[in-house]
Image (cartoon, rainbow, N blue to C red):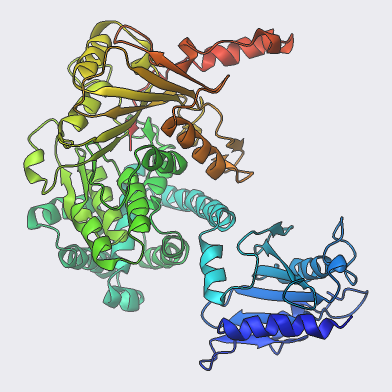
Length: 610
């Protein structure tokens, strides 16, 4: 057999997909590299013992300098892959994984193994090993060779890359929190400072010259000037700009030196800006805000809870958000749910740039009451390229609908807890009623909300009356019981459920509602990163939950269909049969009982959902 035939098949594909284009953007090398960095990494990567590794193809890009592709070819398809991946010189997969293990010390490496001598027998396998990791993973990006840009785009959108970059961002946020604490910058100011610097960095003149200012006074004033310019460029109304400027005014009196502030700006640009450019439509501002405030020792810090990113994703899937949706959040916090909806809508619009612009300018509405959080929401929307003009500061129970240019078709909300020390404060269910009042009355507008489980289980008093009012006007489609430690990252132990309604359609007397036991999202607690999707299983779990809801599937041990009224409990636990065959001595232990009881406990604090 002739291995050269396999190499020719691969090289023909590389030419077809522009790897040898005349602009010299992509560099294809064979056997060895002229780049000292790559040569150094391959110095001890020989497949057969001491010596340098010699991949069939080494592909780099001037535009994406930290991403590299290597190929290993074998003529015989029976020599494609061994069981244990340890026969480096004999098998294509084994050999290319060896190269990846050395190159991944400084690169994100796409390792491609190819075997076969003709088109009909050609086998191609992809593996991805991210920089600094110990192991490559099989990557089903394609069953054939695709373009460099397609590979790179797939890398950036992969769950693997996101988790790695997100972990890095969390580590940076903790280190940054320590630095700002040492400078005596208050917890409530830290999130604003980060968002203000990010807005200022959008200004080209600021980005190019902020290091030249000679005094702290001049630099802080320059930041505020750049923020104002960007707000004006974003067509923010004058009265809104005044409110936002007031939120940022503390920057003029920061207890820090000029050099500290310059280093801070550099660090934010390098760590946060780059993350946002790579992973669009992620609520970074909210993440930093909660990371800072969860260490606060006052009422403003305790109970600030960020809607987890994966739950925001679940919201938009459950509500079937698409390019034509008009989304409304009447207590939007830092606008995390609006950003998650924007991502889904932009994706559905595909390459229709006119529609994408319309989505950002006219199809996202939010209301926020607290001035500082409102500022964060506006900044967040600006950083995600528009939509900010339709975020309003005010009380959602006031006359805010007059500002809407279109009637919302989807309501998404994570309402604030009722302040137990203020008897007249709204209940969580009142925010749901308020949201649905603004939804379109002539279609099948949907509302999705996450609330404490007591809103579903308590049939008496004010909550019972609110449940009655809801069913008189709206249809309860589903309730999903959420993981008991969902908000562990925010140092909160509240237990919640997601409620789904069809607005302006009274709940039929004999209608059955779908209830799901969505307690296990496969996230695990880690010492430094909180709850994370360690196995990468969330996308499939999310899709299975959504599918079960959409199809109203009745799955033993997971979901039921049940007729309910306002007097009944709105949660699956009340109706799902217990399989007593699964009860063991361990399940009856004191520890198990305590854990079960803890799942029913509700935090006695007063969190503010964002």
